[in-house]
Image 1 (cartoon, rainbow, N blue to C red):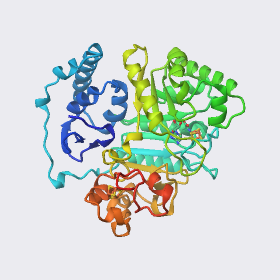
Image 2: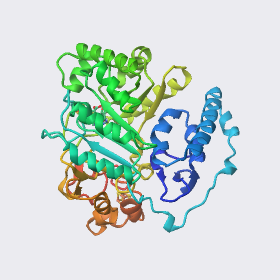
Image 3: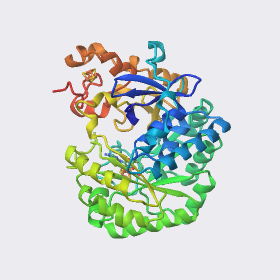
Image 4: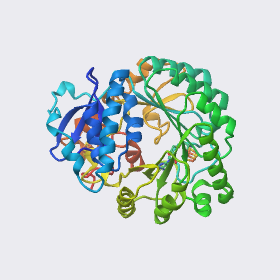
Length: 447
Ligand SMILES: C[S@@+](CC[C@H](N)C(=O)[O-])C[C@H]1O[C@@H](n2cnc3c(N)ncnc32)[C@H](O)[C@@H]1O
Ligand code: SF4
Ligand code: SF4
């Protein structure tokens, strides 16, 4: 059984199950949370902490369920590490325990009653001005504090679990207000905040404030240790000084009790020294984990930066080597190039099913990579309730298959693609078309 991480969806039912797509058999599989965890670790590149971060929070597990899950999964995970280099773990898991069935159509609704996950763009401002950024940042704008606070209270009451503070750089938003938002979210049980920064100016006292507000893992985005590469990627003038300050920041943040993840965006600009960067530089820092993701084209900047199959192959080789080397830190690799072409249908987007995105102007938008495109502004936190906004996120309200591309019109998967699974990435669609109903250029039927 093979499944793809991106194809998973928490099901809208009380049994805390997850819908997986098995791409060997093309069947849907419903697995419990624990079964899903075992499957997740069959891919040795996945680690416990990234699992907990990504999936634990989207389910409302009771204390007992979580304890049980944690001891079980940690045990499996350590067995799994010991069996490195062979497939012992497969023996250890009784695949017969998996509840495998193709659900009825009415179970095949991926849409949750309320969003479980939110991306909130707090500001468009940043310390850097990255040449590869996917965010829409042409106007300076900060989200109104009292509106976003009220919005988050409502989201939390409606069982929102995973909150990503994005932007712009969330740490250049008014810092006292940022702390209030973090405190609010962590006052609710089972919530997680993902927050990433490139800000080299944060002080030890600010890290202590973040920690005291409930933050556990803070993410720094750092794509290279080469000053000239940083200057080129981040639009800064002194890469060496910047790098030194980020290294100091990481050590101050650790002293303040935070765990640090470094996030690396891979592109043609850093692939050739990536392995050296990880082994000689990142491995020496006091990190909790490293997350390596592929560059995605931006709709807003054309910058000569790219990620293609040849880069993906190099990344694959690095990832395989990492599995053989024991490090004190954990890695998560995300490679997406092969999600185009034949594997297009294994990708999913959570927008409209589990995810809501709020722009710095307080508009509900489909995705932060497409910005405030008029066709997909779906509400306003200043004047709409979450229920009203979420109703506008219904995929069948947003997309009109009658207006779709002629290839889509004759495609067997049109309903699933447009209304159930959300295969298409709107950033890919809008890069080549003004119409949100158009074909995704990554789809294997495109050419
Ligand atoms: C939009 S940023 C917001 C947080 C913060 N400003 C930062 O850069 O860490 C969120 C994450 O997306 C990454 N990112 C930005 N543009 C990207 C792109 N075109 N492809 C892939 N990742 C990108 C950033 O490096 C960062 O880790
Ligand atoms: S990647 Fe982050 S820091 Fe860089 S411009 Fe985009 S939002 Fe700002
Ligand atoms: S993008 Fe169009 S052609 Fe491709 S799977 Fe979706 S509906 Fe079918």
